[in-house]
Image (cartoon, rainbow over all chains, first blue to last red; front, side):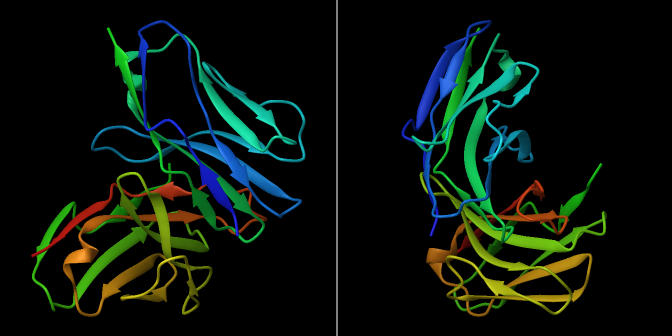
Length: 113
Length: 114
């Protein structure tokens, strides 16, 4: 069974600064995918970024990037130039070939103006 | 854009009632999922379906059942609602793929069982 752990229930960041959200996972699969999802207050959960485990290069999407350390089973999310609209719950998730996602407990990110 | 629509944003029911939560997606996705979201626990999978009339149990199926009679619609049923089923319920859909396909979520239904 897969497990995903987010050790930071809450984080805060000053607007325009950089913040890193931590995630560790445990899986026995050799082929898997990792995701970060964002859930703004009272709004729909959306995909932020995705990483294929077989790719060594870290995924990036504009201000969002990941630090994928496969041997350490770590998958952190870095948000650069934080904006007020980045305030949300962030969930790390892993997905094996069976299409089922396993989620972490979430990190609430607050952005201070 | 993919649209996943859940029939209710808020729902209040009584203990012992049979409760139906409906979810419809408009992108011809094969996979559909039901999760419950509780603070500190993240999202936990209740059931998923990869085809019409097909279903697989997730991590917490006890007390729930599902129905998928049409590809676009996936219903979650609480056979006899209990107070410990008060939660946020999220529906999602995705293309059939080798684990790589992202899931698209509805807005959620906040269910209160009194």
